[in-house]
Length: 109
Length: 120
Image (tube, rainbow over all chains, first blue to last red; front, side, top):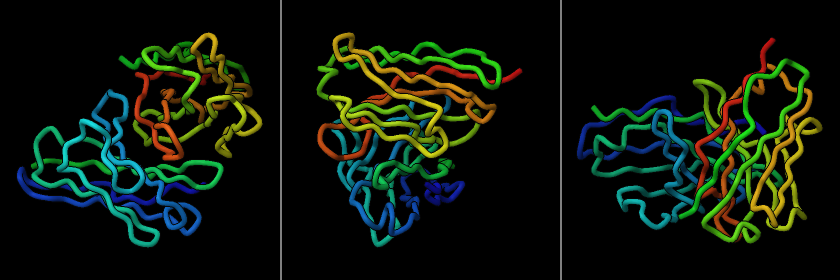
């Protein structure tokens, strides 16, 4: 149950697009289309942004999109807005467990 | 409105025990799988445990296996986490989280968390 690998930080200017990667193994990300992404603002509970690799829950902006290739999943945020500044975590099903990534701090410049 | 409210956190000595509760409302609790996820101060999220809607399937992270026990009472709309043999590294905010229906392995609603501090 090793954590998925995410970049510690990414940044972008308002209106730009950014992509956060999430690298796992053939035992988790590579074996299941069950990758989710969560947004967490300081002091708040996580919020589900993407599930099953690329599906958006009701109410989540279509500026958020997800994809996967092999053992790596990605979250793309287009048209960056100041409110997108937060920590982002990927999570994958891994058989009889789940594993989170270490988290990525997104800074909107 | 879906609500998940955790309680039971606090300060406990190493080796001690604590029981967390999560009160659910605003949805048919008995129809949903639930999880506990924790976050150490200043650190990332760590999945702790999963329980299916009928309690027939239960999973634990290796880090808590044998020490923590997840359970639920569908009649009381409540989820529990019994934590024994607590260690300093168990210090964290503990969230309960509801899974999406089906097998998405994703949690769509989270509580605000309860802080557990293990220290002498």
